[in-house]
Structure formats: structure tokens, C-alpha cells
Amino acid sequence: MPVVGGRARRAGLAGVLLLCGCLAGCESIPEEAYRLPPSSQGVREAQTRTFEVPAEANILQASVALMQDMDYNFDTIEYPLGVLSGSKTVDADSIARNAGLVAADIALVILAVIGGQVPGGSLYAQADDEIKLTVTMVVLPSLENEGQYTARITIRSELVDKSDHVKKVVMIEDPVVYQEIFEKLSKSLFLEGVQ
Image (tube, rainbow, N blue to C red; front, side, top):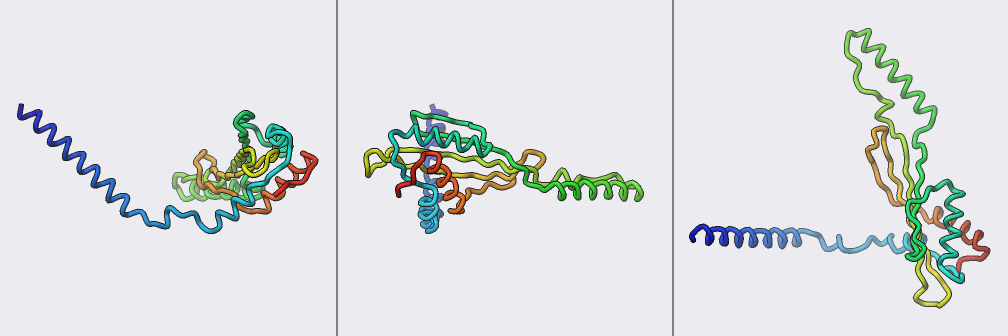
């Protein structure tokens, strides 16, 4: 019987320690961590447009055609949910820079061999290789006006090295990028965005 009581005491002590750890963790989070930065409202406005169309499927279909023209491959198309997501990969390095890194690697190997050393790592292999762009669009019926649909686009950029390691992830916030996309989308819908 003492073993059972010892287990219960240890379980109770573990529970108290876990609760204290959680409370201590909550205390250390600064209050401003729960607030969005002031720039987030402007970014959200740049990423969002309202269109007057018969159905959200019209916006999604026009967006699919537009993204295909922009060389995106689709990861998700959910018409009933009003969601689509596409991605593409572009070269992050210029051809001249890559050629220069290969030449530098050759020079380093030659110098290592002449110096009697084993050649080290490769500069070319450490170079940034690709940027993966992911565009996600969500279309919802407007809460304010019947017959209008609000579309929000977000774009994420991942910088990937030659070893397929993600080096940096950035959410694109430039309003000009979103303005250009929405202008093209408006043209493909044969109407102007209603804000």
C-alpha cells in the first residue's frame, strides 16, 4: 500500500510542478506579444479586395487561369471552401554568380592539391539555390453586401539552399505586388475591384 500512496504523491507533485511551470511561462510572455504590429492593418488591406460577381467560383476560376499564366503549379483547389494555393520555384542565383562560385571552387581545389592538403567544402554547394513562392487565396462572401465577395491573397517566399535546407521564410508585404495581382485579376474578370 505505501507504494500506491508514493505514486499518488509523485503524480500530485508532478502536476503541481507542471502547473507552476505553465504559470511561470505565461508570466514571462510580454503583453505586446499578443498585439499585431501597426503595419499589419495596412498589409491586410493591400492583400484584400472585394469583387461584385455572381459567385465566388468566378473569382477562383479567374485566379486559377491567372496563376497558370504566372507559371504557378496548384497545391490545393477547393471551390466549395473558396481556397486555392499554388507554388513555383525560381532561381535565386544568377548564372554569372554560379559560374563565379564554380570557378572559385576549382581554384580552391587546385591550391589545396598544390599545397598538399585535402580539398575542403564547396562554395557553389553553399550558395543559395532557389526561392519557392507560395500564393494562397481565400474567397468569402462579403458580410456587408450581398453579391460581393472578398478575396485575400498571401504570398510566402522560402529561400532554399542547394541541400534543400530552408534558410529564410518571408511573408511578402509589398502592397505594389498585391496591387498588380488584383489589377490582373480584375481585368480577367472584366470588371474593376469594389473596395
